[in-house]
Length: 315
Picture 1 (cartoon, rainbow, N blue to C red):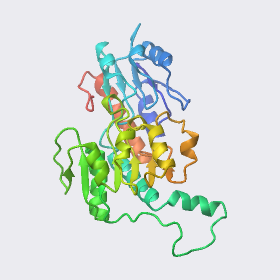
Picture 2 (picture 1 turned 90 degrees about the vertical axis):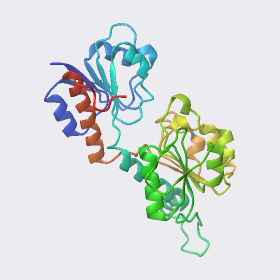
Picture 3 (picture 1 turned 90 degrees about the horizontal axis):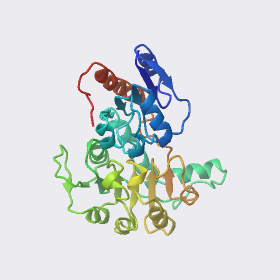
Picture 4 (picture 1 turned 180 degrees about the horizontal axis):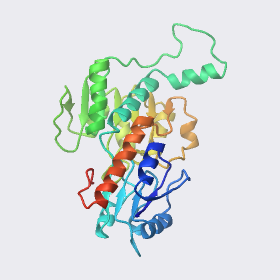
């Protein structure tokens, strides 16, 4: 029986399915594998089901390698050096599609919460400081009809765009490095600065890592409207976090909604102190049926590798 390492606790249905076929080890630790631990795992297990935070960087793929497949739990795989894995004969897969709607829903949650100052309002009520309704109380940004700008018009970007356009009558602009045909009214702009300057609400949905690291830097943020709302449901490393904190602290933009952070689970104190930032603990796919579907997709890729078939979601 082949040995399988699952680097975080998965839903019971996934663990049961895995144990019915493999000798399974499940890490109880919520922190990701260090580089040394990743290297050790590659030497000791036939298959690994990793996720965000596990450091399968280039240095992990040295020495003895037993592992044949890394079936990542999640769409983003910037924590895996895919080229290094391939160089030693390891296949890599991810879990697209099943996460699209759930992540887009969190995008809408953050849009509404940041625009309508929901986080501030809840803190006010919980602190017992609400003095009652008034005509000018906590005025925020009206969402319906505002222009949304999508950074990265992939599956999730398009799902957010559909919700914005059909649900809230929002004109849709998008920036994508390559041409993209979409099945909804949306206009592609030529540059990221153009998008930031024209849209009222910016939603970032690009993959993390690589050329996208710090894609949203101080210069890009400076192009936003002073009334702009910034939303990130991509990866934390896509945004220069210090630059974002700077524009929020100085009110050069109106607010932000973040589900991801540069060094998760660490969130800078300056960011946590901001009333104009809605902060969520990476809830993008946090629904049981979604997480179970992700786990099953990852296992399906491991089984395909085990049976000598192409990985259905190879990257």
